[in-house]
Amino acid sequence: MGKAANAPRIAENEAMAFGKMIRSSARKLNLVAELIRGKSAQAAVADLTFSKRRVADEVKKVLQSAIANAENNHQLDVDRLYVAQATVGRALVMKRFHARARGRGARIEKPFSNLTVVVREREEAVEAE
Image (cartoon, rainbow, N blue to C red; front, side, top):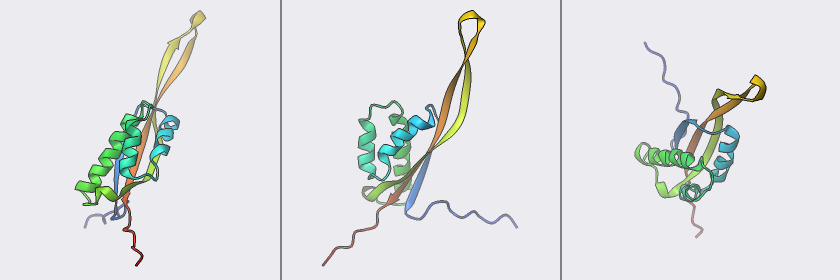
C-alpha cells in the first residue's frame, strides 16, 4: 500500500555524482565545469589535474566519483564514458562582517555551490563495411 516508486532520473547508460557545498561561487565553478562538458572522461580528468584553478580539485573529485559510480553501480565501460552534463547551482551564502573606518561595517559574502556531473557511455561506432 506504499507510494509508487519514483522513475529513475538517469538513463541506463548514465551515472551521476553530486558535489554539495563546494566553497566557491557558482560563476567561478561554472568556468571549470565548462572545461569538461562533452569531453571523454579520461581527457576531462587530465584537464582538471593540470588546471590552475583552485576549485578544479573539487570538480575532479566529483568527476572521479561519477566514473566510479558508472563502473561499480551500473557496470558501464570506463573507456567509453564522456561527460554528458556538468551542472552548477548556488547553495548557501555565509555572511560575515568586516570592520571599516569610522565605526562602519562592510558585509563579506562567502558563497557555496553545488555541482552535478553526469557521465554517459558512448554508443558503439558502427563500422562501415
